[in-house]
Length: 301
Image (cartoon, rainbow, N blue to C red; front, top):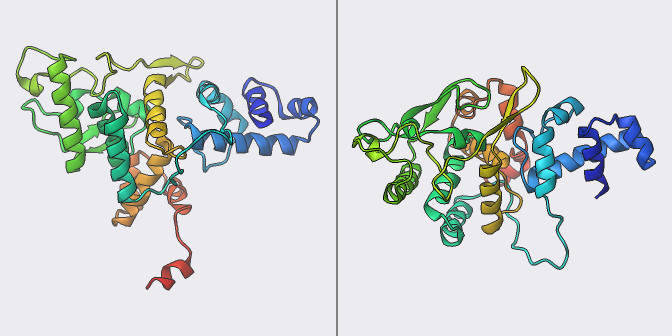
């Protein structure tokens, strides 16, 4: 796919004009095609840290070189012969979500964990890297009760700024409790003390199928260190593919959380507080594409 090849050249450091010359097109064509490629990859497989609705600048692309290269590696072009389930739009209904959870439980090799992982996205809007960093103590109090009003610690948050983390949803509590009970039976991340339900409070909240923490690697130049967790990204990607949601990614789920909060009366400040977004403009961008036309609203009154 030529657009993907152009994108690879650009993130590898080639200037637009050099790429344009190599492919016999104009600089504008190159810029337009790599933007389209980024949007396509973001929708299909997800690119952590790249906002598919925002402007795409070459500096931002190169800063996310590893994530984009990983997305290119994971992307598999669709063929006309390949059987596919009907794609579900990024704006999911309650029925869509219920069906997705049911399919996850039926088709996953680690159903308790994967159901909990999916509900974590749907109820908190956390990024995959943040989910991978969470520890048992972020969810449980020492007496074993749920920390309903918890905190996304600064060392967990992608932007290194602490924010509100809510576990008030009964579905969220039920799914995570079920997974932790399974963990305890398997002896993953346990301790001898009875506190924290017998789990090590500093162990990761979510573990691999083998009971190990998801591997998080650092990269980037000095002063610009970034982190990537391919393991949990792969879990989410496979999960969405198994349940027939090829157009859904962890990034689009964050947008879904913003929309659902807005529909339930949350203010832009409250949405930003949960998602870790300080600027109202950025919150409005998340909501803008889901706003219906005035005619559509009035026609149903």
